[in-house]
Length: 407
Ligand code: FES
Ligand SMILES: [Fe+2]
Image (cartoon, rainbow, N blue to C red):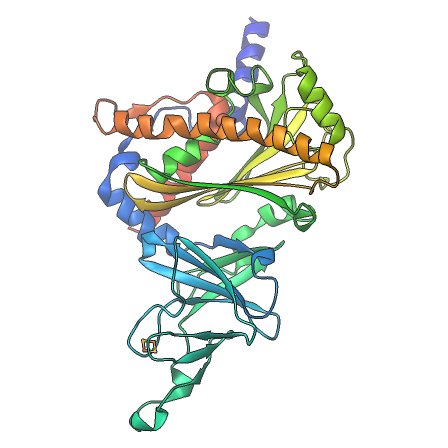
């Protein structure tokens, strides 16, 4: 009897540790309801700090990135000014409301050597610090017009570990540091900028943003969904689950009974680019990650609330980000960073690792639209979560609590 009880404790370890999350099923309504979607946008996405760039994407004064945020019907210019500071502004001209930077997609990059942003409609020119510096035929405007009051509309901006965040709330309730809380300490100190080779993927998915989030927030699916890309490579259980307010993290571990393929061993010996093999040494991970030094540690999987999943491993870090467009439509962005190859054999090793990783992400995203389609039927009112799906349970609780608190 004692053994059976002990076994149950082990199997239910996360809800034993976090009993406030309960053990019951979670409702399906938030995945399909238009009303809940609209409230998530207004009360969460328009009030949270959101990662929109890396500082390396705007390296010099005059470098800019324009990021369209469909959920808010706006686009944000993230631009580095002559003083070296990265700021953000709505991409809307103060004259007649045209876009200042002409967008060529959901992300537009550019560089202006003079560190100015000219609007091509009538030639108003803004400094990269957002001030309106020049208006053609300014003397034809009236005395009520003040150039000093007609700069670009600023957006709250801050940077943590090279990640550029914005907050669409004109008066954010919290600073970025307050918003990050203990998450910043847990993930700070990793050499994000040193891993310069980035493999980047983007696609539109016909699903709610939370379906994307959930699909990357457990390892229960690895033996089924990833039987093709990573057969028996990862353990289905999590380790070191922790919550930092609305944020969450855990470790994903390797299944060490499974020998890697010969080609994976060769690639891994040439260059660190794959999560499949254990890292030979610990050089990059801060002490807060894998604190007990588990020998089966593969990578840390976290959600920076609401829509960024940040993962770190020795020699590799990667993100998933889900941008809502509609109740049942989402942009998924996957970015995978490794140390740049120095030799042809290292290039081969990285490409080999990335093909496997790309396949795994295709396997992941394949389920998302099917899940949405099925839930739209209304046939199921609840989802049943097991103990190792604790991150999904936490997200459901955080969102429900936030929406309820706003009522
Ligand atoms: S709308 Fe921008 S200069 Fe006229
Ligand atoms: Fe997966």
